[in-house]
Every structure is written in structure tokens, then in C-alpha cells.
Length: 276
Image 1: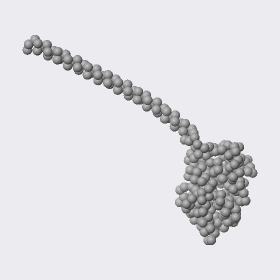
Image 2: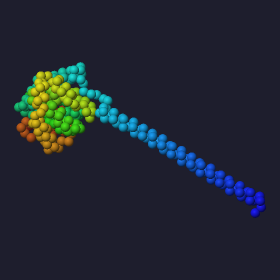
Image 3: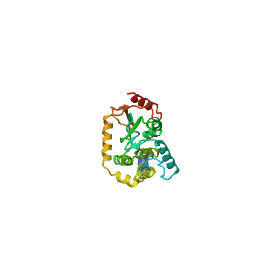
Image 4: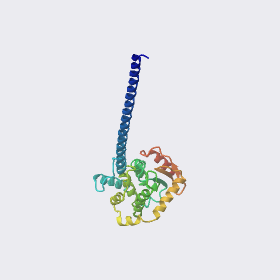
């Protein structure tokens, strides 16, 4: 090998070493950069997680919605609602859960959950003309029955339904029920508190609050709710509102409604029951 060839070979080896060092350096720098990126992403992910948790906490605290709350007891809205309920029930009789003449020839059992928004649709829609046409004329009596569907907590369900049933001890159950539906809050928002239930009681004309408070402790109401639930199950009811209509004293039949705002279908079923 000539000196020139030897020098060229040494230069080539040196170039390869330099190139290898450059490649290693580039790889190391890339690794460091990737690690830094991963750290930044991890930090960003942690920050996002914190934000998500904060949002969840806020949603839980607000019931997942910022929409309507029940009106204040002394508000203009509450006053109007009470006036509407009082006008609707004027000219009717009440005894416990029964609205109307106890000897009416036709009975309708209305299974409801006080927090059920669909029950509210019926109460504010088809029910008022039914009361005017049939209950006030003595041809129909309506029995309110309890069935848990919309209320998320069983204890809350029992507490709110008992509050209405206890008002029935003073023959004011339907005033309480109707006021509850008229002033119903956002479903699942946790609006049903002791303050809310007492506020409704304060709006029922003539209700003795001391007696109402005492009557809420009567165990018969829990037993009544249990009976209602069992009978609803026996009839295959899985949602509310649900109805049984028929001649008083005879077997009541399940009524499958087509509308909760138009009373026409109910009128036909009641007329049919009257004809036997």
C-alpha cells in the first residue's frame, strides 16, 4: 500500500467515526426532545384532568343543569300557580288520595311520581278538563297512587310522596300534589329538599302545618306506597303516568293513552265505563 493510499484509508476511517458520532449525537438529541415532549404532554394531560374534575364537581353541585328551579314560596310565579290549582279544584271534594265524589260511578287510578315531568304534562294538560267535565259533575273519582320512576333516590321518593299523602289527612292531598307538579323543578337536580316540601305545604290554603308535620311520621303512608308499588307491578306498569279506568266496584282496566295533553281519549274511556 502506497503512502497516499494509506492516508486516504485513514481519512475514510476518520470520516466514518465523525459520521457515527454525529448520528449518535443526533439520536441522543432526538431522544431528549421526545422525552421533553412526553413530559409536556403528561403535564398537559394532568391539567386537562384537573379541569375535567372541576367541571364534574360543578355539574354535580348544580345538578348537571342551570335550568329552572322551583319558584320561591312568596314569588309572583308561586302565587299564580297556587291560584291556578285552587281554581282547578274548586267545586270538588277530597278524601285522602281521592278527588271527587266517593260514590262516583267511574274510578280512575292515576299512578304517578311527583318528580316525573311526564306526569306534569298530564297534570297541566289533559287533567284540568277531565276534572271539569267528569269530576265536578260527580261522574268520576280519581285516586292518586305512588309509583317511583323519575325520582332517583328511593328515600327522597318516599319522603315527597308521604308529604302529599299527609296533606290528605286534612283532605288537601290534591292541593299538595297539584302544587308540586305546577312548581316542579328540573328532573335529577336534587331540588326536592325539606325546605321545598315545607314551602309547598305553606302554599296549600287552609293546611295546618303543625298537624301536617306530625302526620308525616305516620307509618301507614309507607305501607300505602308499598301497596301501590305492588299493585302497579301486578298491572305491568313500568312508567308513569299510568292509569286504570273502570266502573267503580268492578275490575278496573289498564288505559293506554295516546295523548297526555288532549283529554279526548280519556273522555272515551270514561264514557265507555259509564255505559258499563
